[in-house]
Length: 345
Image (cartoon, rainbow, N blue to C red; front, side):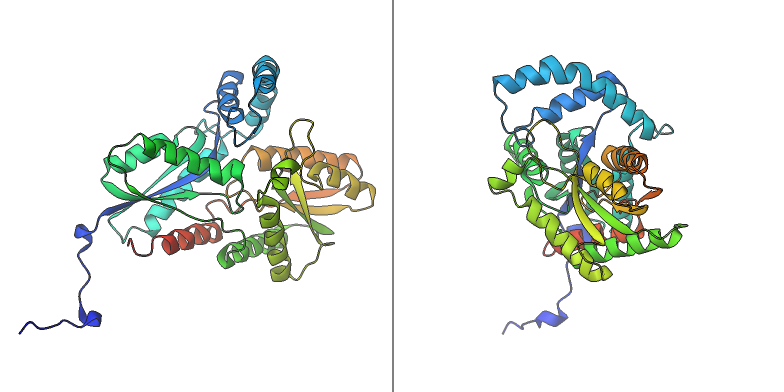
């Protein structure tokens, strides 16, 4: 008679027998060089994505190629040079995302069948290169990790679009999972709160209030059903509860608008101007929608918006760093990845 081995006494399969699993961290992207040609290549890829600019008709193509790509690369290249990592000759976004992947690999090093890599939706290293590298290392399963806490079609969805396009060209496809948005995940809210409190404790002044600035989006996209605005609101409401703040002490704003259409409001730059004119003298700004510091946080917020605030009467301004590869930030990424890898590892 065949004996039955109790489930709780059964030994797990050896790690060497487990199929290899790839984890691909994916962020927005960056130019390869901080000059007009490099920025032009990046902007062309970015602004030619129908998820970013939905109307890709003839008028937009004429504007993009005849006006934007002729003038904007020069001015944006100057902005990139202000924040460029000269030691590694790359943008901070690339430096930080690489470090996030390296630290995640260390955190998962006890699982020898897990391979971690990183990629950019636009620019290099590409998603194609990331998936190819994981497959070359024998990964039969891949977890794609869009590093966007709040979902939007122009960020999370376009990452999925590109991952699916890459897989569509393969005869032997790896099994795929994609992490969900984590806009009100407990670990994420706790990491944000810890980061804010730690930064405020290091300042020589006490801010009158905190402004939370998210990347903007055309209002029409939300009107069509994009959940991004609701996700941003949910993040700030959870963060207010955690910090014991309210809508007058932790403000929600949107930055980086582009073109003439109405975008989500209130606008960050207009809010800076209004606050200063209303007598607010000391503020701190946090950017919860960015998993890593980049042009929009290091130049647009920490430099451009700081100048707007001070020009209109503000006195002290501090930009709170993104979670980046800090211990709290890595706790968020690690917990998200381990949760979504259940059943695979």
